[in-house]
Image (cartoon, rainbow, N blue to C red; front, side, top):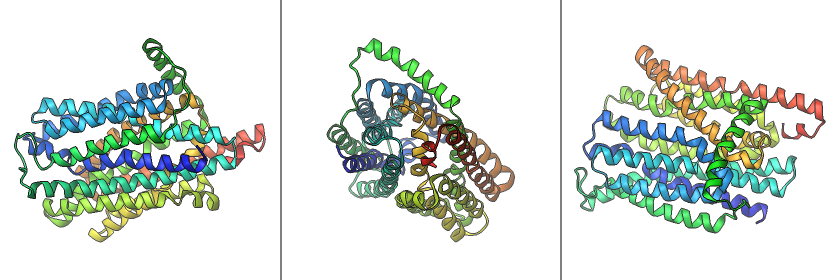
Length: 431
């Protein structure tokens, strides 16, 4: 395929990957409540999803580096489809735990291979240099836009479909085979069928040698170990690892602190929930739209400077989120997502320049593992901050964590300058 077709395919596949997940967002917790699970039981299911995903990220990343990106993506979509069907029909804790574990397996399988495939394709087309970095930034930016819009559309559509199903006669709760909240999950499963077909049609498989099952299993361990040594041993990747520890913990305030803040400002949990749904959708849209600006920002400011300014601005926005009333909260959260939108696309060329093709998915899995650890630590820190100082204090903590993530980019720039001085100007083109 041509460069343009690869960008288009990556964008379309990113949207199709996240649209079904958007449908899950508004109903995942509510359907467990509707089936009679208590808060503690729901917490167990959520914990199983997080823990299973973290445990499987590295092995599945290594698997994608051994057997190929498309194979693992198709497997992940099929497993996720099965998990949504189980979520839609489960009626007790045991079945929801099984559904959650399956969802985590699918999530781990689909984390990283699609981006790895696109980067491999661009690296095959262009040698190292400005053209390669510009194409990567363009593709990652457009995929970010597609992802944000797909999540927003899914989040809004999921709630709408559930309400239409209720009005159509399905019960709101109970242990019948289907309740109204089951329908968005079934629609998500149907969309995953479309996603699998699109993967088979739009992805040209990167050539991987055919291997037996034993050889595949033996290859995963070394792939993970080599990927770990690569991340730890490379100066640029170490600095990015610090960013992966900080940003997810800071942005967790959007999920953890915002509902509490809204409840306090509006004095009614139901009203807060009604405001939160559209706010989530608007923030997803905002983040997706500005992701498309990454190529312009890279040309005018440089990738590292633009990413650093965006990260610091997002941190400042979180601090402001807790400093005023409802209008300030909403505006600050939307701004935080607007400015952070281009960052992944701006960072991408610097990351992928350091990683060979046969370890790329593993590197992205390391990123996901670190991010999951960041979320776990952030949940504790932000929860403690709310208990001790209230939601304004928690937003300050989130803002500081996010803003601090701009500093490692200074370390990245220093490493690249040293390398450029040592080996000549070729490395400097990515700065």
